[in-house]
Length: 565
View (cartoon, rainbow, N blue to C red):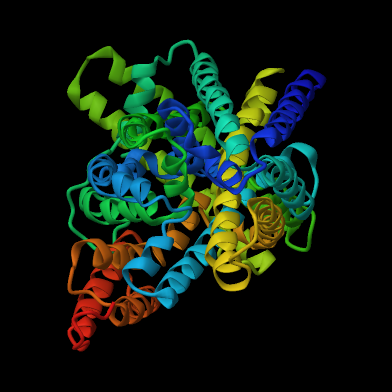
């Protein structure tokens, strides 16, 4: 990066940390630190809800997903609007009127202490793992830009965000989220404009979409019903619905957002804002990834986007093999480039259909040959490094930005990625600290302390979870596409957590015995499904929820005392 880029990034980081620290004056009491005194406007809460979910994983992982696989990932969110409507009717008024700090407090009132504790524990595990993945995404960026090790960048990003979250509490998190969302949207539109401006003069946006469409990257609806396919209409509408209900209705990181709203009505509006804006935003981010794919039809991409691994192989014992594969890759690119130019020329001419079909077939064949050459390069890296799960999908977008954006714009987009990361990291850490303090420390160890004492404990808990998440992040980048990894982590727990709340709210006959053991059976069933079947992870949410509800209801029938919880 050049001096102007560094100036933009440093100015952003200094401002965000200063802005978060100055919110300390609003966080003296427990109500202020954990719930902002329930005083925030709906639009701020709505932007914070979106910012909590829109992490750097979304900008890094989703753009990489769009580059590799196209728009199919958008189906993941098709259940979101319906989920938000359901939660506006049920969860928002329910939790708000209960006057709770955490979603899990209610479970003690409805069932018993051990059910509350177990549910909160599983939330802590799932979010602790998830925030580690969220930290890993911007660390990938820093490692490319600065040339640092990923270990150094993980702790630089994770601990810097932990500091202002510890000091400012949820008030700092929310208002910082608002400003960060503005930077993110602005950065996305600037990035989109720059990509389009870098296409060859003879290639229009329509031509670019034709190229992407020919490879299947514009598919947004796949009606195939196959439990093994991750992204289909049905997995999004059913599995995605269960995931979104669990995430926004049972996950403390989201429940805590709408609990900070001024009223039930404003809490509902904040969720509806996400329902209507989230899918278009994800569409835009995926489209950026698809257009990066089109850009690389005419400009040579690196065979391996992970520069560190590429250098190790190119300069190591397999250097000769790498050189031969790279030469083969360059020839495959030249063939694809020529075929792409010919395809665009024929497609835009409106001429002979046979000639257009032939050009399309030639392009697809050349693209297949290019992908095979790149696949052999990735296989070599896996073999040379011993990392059988190696993938460089998370490095596609940052590599494109650093290599192709003009001065100043690189800094802006890096700042946008940092904004996305810090908004999610801070919100997740704050929710982890809230659950730790309220559900464990206050409930089990010191129930009679004053509010300032709990604020101090909350700050300590934030720091501990921040360090824990950094260690998780060290391993996350080797697990595959980060956008899939974080949702896979969540899907192991979310469906089962949702099942407990379904028992609590919708099944009057449910008792604590059923809820407690149903939750354990649900988590176990998801592990069995992940270990012994090829079912896509989105369906884990359905499996976990149904097992908890069925087992929980049946076990509740064994409780004879009608007054028992």
